[in-house]
Image 1 (spheres, rainbow, N blue to C red):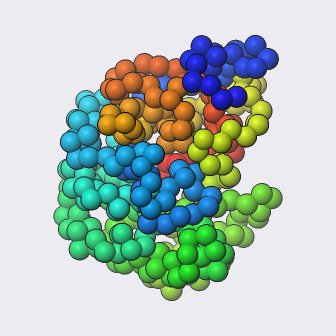
Image 2 (image 1 turned 180 degrees about the vertical axis):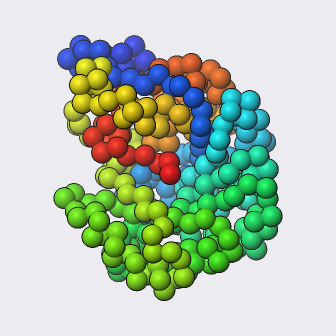
Image 3 (image 1 turned 30 degrees about the horizontal axis):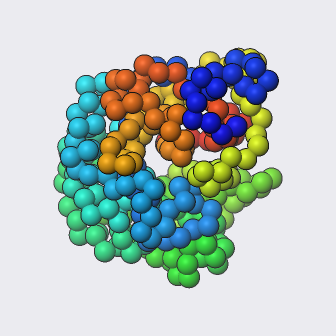
Length: 302
């Protein structure tokens, strides 16, 4: 169901109370750095591509305001996604400001935008908090990865992964999860590539199911309040990202606080202009990506 009418989110199409999460805490604050990207991947869950401005570049001024508020709310970690964060001209300055206070995670394709700024990145090792990078390696087969990301980009990303590890930064990878796959076997298939790059074979691998493109609304089962209690226990409900994280998104010249990293294509998930306001609001689980979290336990956190 596609709607920006908040009242319609309260009930499913069958007039049952919709499932929801009432946020309990702010452990992790995400920043969207903008949908501009150097690559044009057909499956991108953000629809990012060169010159894209659906979500505008985050500015250092924007970031500092929310870093300060998040610290007051007890945040434990800052994370950054895109687009490709290193396309944003202010990104290393933003990252340096965040690292003054808390550990940080950056999601990156680890190709030219990051490769060209490795000197700036190396300097971030001097910051008082640790910095981790999650590099996109879609398949443990370079040819399959490069079908969508461009010829030679698996090799570039793998080499950059190794260079970041050698600099002392934490590293992990993200990959696509295929229907009915043997996940353990797919994960093991990366081991030779990790060895060649000089990174530990047991680094974290985050797997993502099909999320569909932003602005698309595939038919999925609706989540009711009864679903949340019948099929999930308290710990599983607490593991929903919207329980403990939020994301800052800049659109039309202003920043909004969105419910999580996966729902920035629907304005009903813009929960306000401050973290304090957003944390007080229930998150109604009406987006098709909410069902992915419900069914697969999907999470952008580590």
